Length: 356
Image 1 (tube, rainbow, N blue to C red):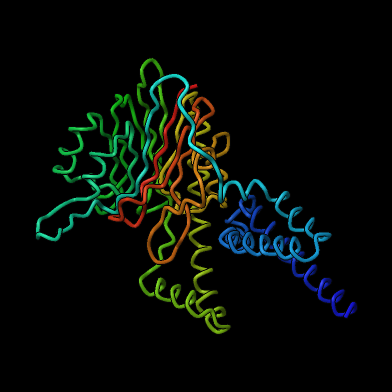
Image 2 (cartoon, helix red, strand yellow):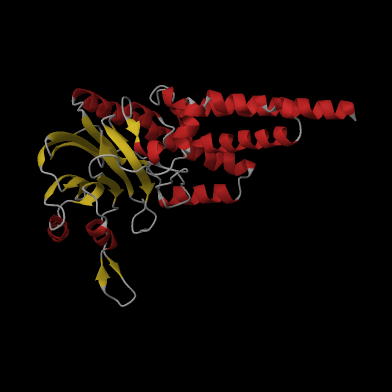
């Protein structure tokens, strides 16, 4: 029995070591260039899988052989930055000085009109924005040419600036503070862009960068394959559908990397004491795009959010791909993903900021 027990422990130790290596590859994948290593850069997607497996080994060793619990703990310590980025644990903080600023980012999916139970036309996204109480709103896939929506919003947000990219959709900044100037940040893309807005915030200037980076461009057939893969991950599904989806995702990651580099350069050239960078990155917090754009900034959700904070709500893609980054001049009091509205394929993400 001792021989069997020792053999089993040794095998489990080897498996745990393999899981640890996979965990660290995922944790440090944001440091790989997606242009040079597109497939390896995608391994961040598997981070929650290896995170769960390593935690399972922690429980196994804790309950069975505590002498081995150091291995999963060492793995967690080595990748702690990624763990905190992916699933932070915080509590809301009380403001210390002035009235906090509420900032919201939301991919509105075109702000589509819907029909309620009584047959009346309604626009849930528009109603949400008018009642959300935010001081500054950054929108993606905003219907730039819809004058009716603009008229409704300007009654709450007197300062609105938007840029149209394709099919009448674009990015926009809605503000209760005057928008002093703005500029479009162009990068190689037919349907995506970023924009820089400068707002007059009392006696200070606030720089806001709103982003909509390259999507993964999965067709309805691709989403069907993804769902089938989740329901029955057979060997054949993994070798055919899995490889196809991974290759398609890798192509999008490489495109996003170039866009992220462009945005990071604009942030560097326009660095401001008070600065917020937000929007739909179409990538998780364990990604090259998030790492490059957030350089010198802090993630509001990591600072004051709690849990994984999935912001995409369609097709079983459970990731936090909408982000808010701030300069150190702000103290983040709270940050949440608002799941009270499902009119878009994204949830809104808002945070409360206090000037230090």
